[in-house]
Length: 125
Image (tube, rainbow, N blue to C red):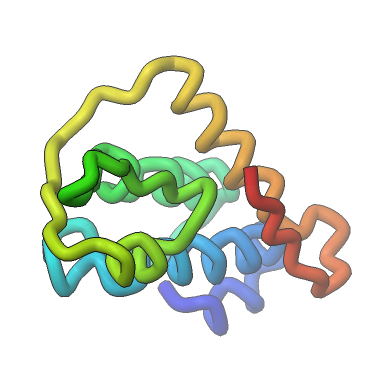
């Protein structure tokens, strides 16, 4: 499902800014590790389904580090920014702590436009 389709469903419209920002943050990762690219289902009926799909993006389940042992934090910068300052990237599956999962969830919800003003909130933590 693309953002044009989401505009047709009033309940899902608030998620469009979050989708756009998440796509931006993940963009480029598929060149290094294809399965981590951004994906959405063909359709959604509820905001809960869409939120769960955003929250379960594969990129959240991996730690990406570089030769200086720096780790990419999707909440702080785009993957492209991290990759640009890295010569070598390593991808490792990780288990997020409950605090990290809560931070990701909160970040995604903050990116949403609940008032549907059209203003994208790209708050960085």
